[in-house]
Length: 95
Image (tube, rainbow, N blue to C red):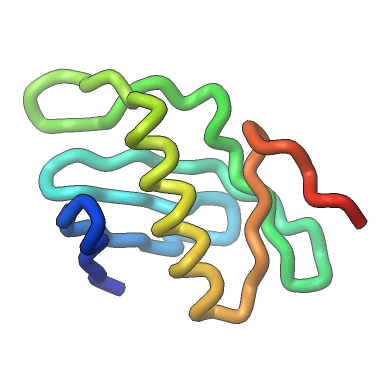
């Protein structure tokens, strides 16, 4: 799945690597996000403790803006799969 985020114009890719990992990439940098299936078409992604991009040169810091962009793009990708997403660094929505 390849999309463009028009507000920042960043090419990105979201890959559902396996049941426990989603790979998010922008160009040559990527981040592997641990995933837990919560049931009822909902997954929990563990973004809180991730602090750097994996890149060919050296690890690059993962900024708050990067995490916001990742959350938005990953949420859209999972929505296309009819899945709801929660992140461990966001407050849970009221039931």
